[in-house]
Structures are given as structure tokens and as C-alpha cells.
Image (cartoon, rainbow, N blue to C red; front, side, top):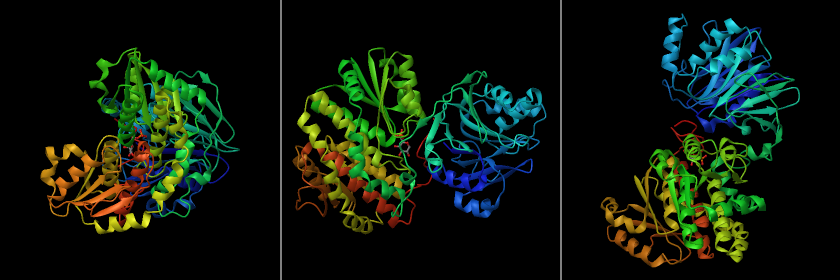
Length: 589
Ligand code: G6P
């Protein structure tokens, strides 16, 4: 769960690597490092800390050399120290590597290599890759062959890049179960975990598949299998633009992404008709429908289950992807698995779909990152079209998922008039976004709160879960999301004088019953902040949302909860874009 980038070209590599690495800071941000070839040797500059601090500490911008690799780390093996930061080098320091993933057999490999005389400097699993390549380079004399031999020894997941000081224009990259994509430039080429890292230089990409190696120089890109068979380099133009990854006038990416939702919801609805019909038919024809996802996307999955049941009378089960081993017995060739993921690279989600596919299940998906591993595992994959999401906490990707889920549910229910109304949602989203200042005041008023409870019934229950998750991720404050009726079965014991309760209570069929639950909490001293289109004397505060067709409340009401969590973080002087300990794309199990 790290970000890696390699560059070879006609510019100084250091500033390019720095800029590119910063775009991937969302993938991990406890340490960073650079390896740059200059004067026939590899300079390694690395440390623990945030990229900008490290870059100025090591004066990265002044470094010379036109070929290099870089890494932003989210520690798995070995503490957060300078020694454990990547790149890692071979004994003779002539080879340097960066790596995203986990090498499961690193202990076995490192003891073997140590017996053969290799000296290790770090506690990481990654360092074995550098020593393995060194071992085979001595025998094979070819970087490509050495890397092939090395990766064949590795068990686990990896996207890894290697530099050789005697090949000053070459970067090699290998992938197995972790993302790696080549950026095709003019007189320069890139290889990275994510397109966003190099999109300001080129929008032409070639996706690497598992068990493939890319070899890039300024003028040439070649792809091979781990066995050395050449693979055609297929160039794809991505629709993202450099401006999509700038913060523009916003203080944080998270706020920018929240603010984009009036447009991104519409973009999500712009689907290829043939593909979305095929997606719906797959649901209609399946005996057994299972939805799977992690984190925020899992909450979209719960809403999908509710909507399919409520509108289309289709029974679907939803499970957390990391629980696949406890679901697998109920999955067979009559099962349709719907996977939902912003990144399309979440290891838990990929493992779930691979295990389901191995049992004969058909896989379809909703994914933001076109070309990601999940799109490749899917029979049909519908893109979220929300552009790059940089803030670690998912915001616009969630409402894009919901928009497509609504479209699918309405199609399956034959509710064409409702489908048309989806196109008007942007207007209502704007109204909610205009309440930013009011929500900021509420966040300020509750900045000392130790706990928040979010409640909602039916379609509002997954939104309560999502509101609580946003609050935890962004403000590091304990928060729980509950089905409103469940509160009295235990959690009510925690409600005390002044405890903030966010009640999602728009005027639909859940209104009166949720109001009863609100009364129960008021009687225990709770301070109720309602998200609703209808005021009530029981509310201490209200965040007003527009009166829309009740079916659409969830997609509107989640936006104030995102804004509330954002300002809760800002009030606590935290960085909402990069919450501690978290990463956006969790490519490890
Ligand atoms: C990480 C992110 C969450 C995200 C989850 C699933 O935990 O921090 O924001 O919801 O992964 O990610 P996916 O890309 O599969 O939607």
C-alpha cells in the first residue's frame, strides 16, 4: 500500500519524481525516498516523514540525473525509519528497488541470501528483491533476465521497480497483484502505481497485467511476461486531465471533491447503454446475487441491496470483501458477484472476486479507475466517471456509485420516470453544498465532542454508517452509525447529557419512527442534529436538505455529513486529505 514511480527521459528526474510522488501521497505517507542515477552511481535519498519535508531535507530539487525511481511508504514490514524507507539497494549498491505489496516468503529468502553472503540493512520484506536481482545479475548479466529470475522466487504481491547503475537510461518494473502502469511520453517514459502521478506529463498509458515486466528507456517501452515472451504494448488514452488533479481554489482535495458532486453525479449517469443493459440483465438472470466491497464502497453495497429489494423486488446479499472465506461455500456458477470499488485495486475486493470466479461466479463491477485490476476481472465494468479522487476518504466516488446503483435499480424496476429525475439531482446537490458555512458552525460547536452517533432507518441506515465512517477517518473522533431502531438495544447506554446524535430523518416513511428514537435519546440528554427537509421541535439543530422525491434522499443527505466530517477535521487542526494510519488504496490484505 505504497506508491511507486519511475522516470527516464530528457529532464532532470528529481523534480519530476517529486511532483509525481506527491500526487500519490494518498497511497501512504509515513516515509519517502528517491533513487537517481548520476555519474554511473545511484544516489539514494530517503527518510521517514512527509514527502515535502524529506524533499527539502535532502535538497532533492538540486539533484542531477535523468533516470530514477521513487517511493511513498505505508509501512507493513519494519518500523517507520530512514533505513526502512525505500529504495533498498543490493550489497554493492549498484541496484536499487522500490516496492508496493508484501513479499510473503521474505524470511525464507533472506536467510538463504544471508547464507550466500548477502548483507541486509533494513527490516523490510522489500530488501530481498534487491539482493535477489543482484544474485541473478551476476549470473545472467542481463537486467531483464535477472529481474525475471528474481520475481519468480517471490511469493505474495508486488509492483516493483529496479534501477541498475550500469544501465543509466533503464527502469524495469514487474507486477503481480499490485497496480503498475506505464506512461508513454515523447522522449521520456514513466512507470507508476497510478496514472494520477504522471498525468501532467502524458495521458497515454499502457496497463501492465499480472506476471508482466516492463522495460522503459527514454525512447522505448517493451513489455514481457515473467518468462521473457514479448507482449504487445497497447496504448490507451485516459480521459483525465492535469487540471483534475489540482486543488484549484480549495484548501484541501477533500473539500474540492465534495464540491464537485453536482457534476460528478451527472457524469456517473453517462453510461454506455449496451454495458449497463448487460449489467442489469446479469442481475435479472442470476439465481444468487452477491454484492461485495470494502469501506465506503461497502456502504454503497448495502444501499444497493436495499434498493434492489425495495424497488425491483430482487433479493441480493452483501458481504465485506475480506469475509470472502466465510461466504465462499454459498457461491457457485449460478452466482453473480457485483464488486464495488473506487480504486479497483483494493486487495480484499480483488481476492473476493478471484475466489468467487474460481467457483464459477460471474463478476461485474462499478469502478472509478478504468484499466484497474478489478475492471480486468469483470465481465462488465461500469465506470464511475468521477475523475481522480485524491483525498484519502472517499466522497465523490460514493455519490457516483449511488447514482449508478439508482439507475440500475430503476431500470430493473421499470421506473423510467424516476431515471429521468436522476438528471436533476445536481441542482439539489448545489443547494446542500451552499450550506457549508452553517455546517462549519455546527462542527465548531461540537469540536470537543468525544463521540458522535449517526442514526437512520432503511435507506438512511447505510448513510448513517457512512457519516460515522467519515467522522472517524477525518476527525479521529469516535463515531458509530446505527439503524435508528437498534439504538435502544445497547448503545443508548452511552448517550449522556450533550452527546451529539446526528439523526438522518427526511420526510419519508421512516420519519415518524425515527422521531420516536430521537425522543428516546432526547430523554437521556442527547443533543440532536437532524439532517432533514422537515423541522421538528425535538431537534436542537437542523441541517436542511431540499425536499426531493423520497427515493433520492440518501444521495443528497450524505453530502452534509461529508462536509461535517471535513470541518470537524479542520476544527481539530487535522489534515483531512491524509488521515493518519490510512491509505486510499489498500493493496495489502
Ligand atoms: C480504503 C480507503 C477508503 C475506501 C476503501 C475501499 O480503506 O481509505 O476510503 O472506502 O479503501 O476502497 P475502494 O477503492 O475499493 O473503494
